[in-house]
Length: 526
Image (cartoon, rainbow, N blue to C red; front, top):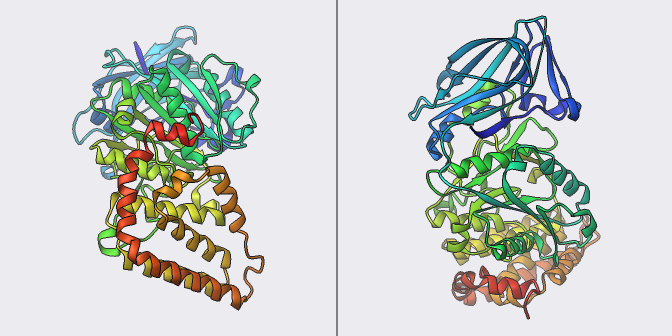
C-alpha cells in the first residue's frame, strides 16, 4: 500500500469548511493528542471540501495513477458512500456504498478500489460517512493505491525569512509534527536574511539554518538552492515564503504527484486569503497577456480563480477546469532539479517579479506550471499590503523582465510612465513619483548596476528615498516641478540608449542567473 494523501481534520473552527462537512449530530474534538469527530446515530461526516477532495481530473492527467482506495479509522457502525462530481451541471454520481459494523480504530477499514476515469468524465471524488450505531467516531483516513511509484523523490524545502520568527516556528512545527511526512525524504533549508534566528533552535536532523545577507527574496531563495544543490541528493525543490500559514498535507501531496508523474511539471500552490480563510485569492496567474495590443504596462498580472469562496461544491467543481497560467508565487512553488540544470537560478531582483521571471523561463523550456487544487497556503494577498518602497522593485523588475522576455518599445514605456507620474503629482503623491523615476533611472543604467551594487545598501537607500517628502497630500510646487523636470531629462536621455540597454539586459540574464555570479553577489566567493 502506498499512501497518496491524507485526509486531515481542521486545526480550528475558522477553517472547518475547508476540510470537512458535518451535520448537527457530529462534532469535532480539536485536541491534537485526541483529534477526532464524534458522531451520534445519524451523524454525517463528509470529505466534500477543498483540502480533502481527490481531484481525479488532475491526477489522471498528470500522473500514472489509475486506481485508488480509502482507508478509514472508525469506531462504531457506519454506511460509507463514495461520490464523484464533475463540473457539468455539478453532476453527482455514487461510485460505491458499503456498510461496516463494530469498527475499531485499531483495525482500519478499506473501501472498495476506485477506478479513475481517464476521460472528460473525470471529476472530484470524496466520501460520506453516516453513523448507524448509537455512538461512533472518525479519527483519520488516507487515500492509497497498490500501484508502484514511477520514481523516488527527495525534496529540498527552502524558506527565505526576514525577521518573521513566529511564522517560521509555526511552519517548522507544522511540518515536523506531520506523521505522514516523517516517511518522506526531505530537508528544510531556512535562509535567514535578517540573521536574527538562533542556531540552537534548529537541531532537527532534517533542518539547516543558513544565515545570509539581506539580498531579498530572490537572494534568499537562491542561497537556499545553492546550499541544496551542493548536497546533490534532491530531485525536487520547494520554495516557501516565511509569512504563510501552512497545511503540511500539501507538501506530502507534492511527493505523490512527483512519484507518479507522467512528465516534468512545476506546481504552483494557491494563495488562500489569510484575512478570509475560506477565500481562494488566486491559483496561479497570467502575465503580460495583452502586451501585443496594449504595450508596456507594469503589474500586468491577471489572477486565475480569483476570489473564489471554497465553501460550496459548485466552487470546488469550478477548479476542475484547468486554466492556463504563466506564474506561481514563491509562497509555495516547486520544480525539479532538471529545471535548474536548464534555466539555472533566479535573477537578482531582490523582491517582486523574481518569481514571475523564473516561471517565464520554465514556460520557455516547454514545461507546464500546474495549479493543483487542494495545494495552497494562507498568505496576505498583495492588495492587503501597500508599501511605497515596493513600487521601485515592481517597476524596475517589470522593465527588466520585459526587456528579457518581450519587445519593450521606448515610446509606449515613456508615455505610460509620464501618465503615471502626472497622476501622482496631481494628487501630490511625491514619494510615489520619486519611486517611479528612480526605478526607471536604475533600469537605464543596465545590468552593471545590479552587478556592482550591494543589495543591502541599495535597499536601505530605497527605503530612505521612499520617504523623501514629508508633505504628502499637500501642494509643493517646487517638488512637483523638480520631479517632472528630472523625469523628462531621464526620459529624453534614455531614447538614445534604449535599444542597447534592452539588449544588455537580455544578454546579461544568462550570467546573472549563474551559480558563480550568485556566489560572488552573496559574498560566498571573492
